[in-house]
Image (cartoon, rainbow, N blue to C red; front, side, top):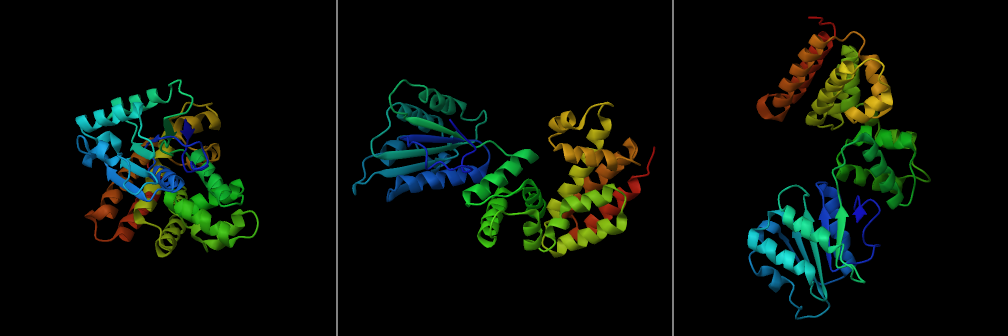
Length: 336
């Protein structure tokens, strides 16, 4: 089975009549589909959602093309196929049609699990050639996984980036994989030699220093003026209010989780538990000075209220965020 599709690319791997792309990482799944379709080189391409596949329709889609040259059938969200259509797909996995490339995407959850199980079983046959290939596209959630994604994107673009550059880009752009991939492509095209942290900071003209995470850091540290200044700069440079509030919420939640950890737990072990890098845990431990559980509860309530307002309930997202920051800073000294 291939892993993290679209990071190393899938077109260079051995082809198979059927490929199932499994996982919730939409960007990687979409990229894998594009690469497979391009590699097939067919003029006749059918692309539809699993919910739209009717009983018996698969046979028609996989029939020999009148124009020759083979065809490609892409069925997205295959977990949404109806019972009869899913049965058609399961039967097809055992005897794929010639000159047809079938590409399925599947979220990987409990829905449509029988079809997924059938596909995985088909990869274990003793045939000399593989008829079904599984490509895993699991959700990228951890900090280290995003850093590896960025490094891999630069490799795809024919260059390299050090850890400092990867962290700076993540701070500047955020965690959306599509935006990160586009940023990597652009930086690789516009930078001579390896991409450095200085190159990222220069390219984004200050965005790397004024993201939601820097706003959150200043707020939980009690630096009101700096936090408000960073907030206004971040908004002025196009950082989404939703992302800023998400960073505030993440910062406050980390205070609570790190603060509640037993004494003596090292940063590496705690990092693995909460899904943050060790250097972030060390920073949070410093930020915890002056915080008490009652204050963290007040701060969590502030970001929860701001979340509703920036998503449509409030008149001004900027006002809601600034109010949340002021409440977070004030909560830092709440002891009961």
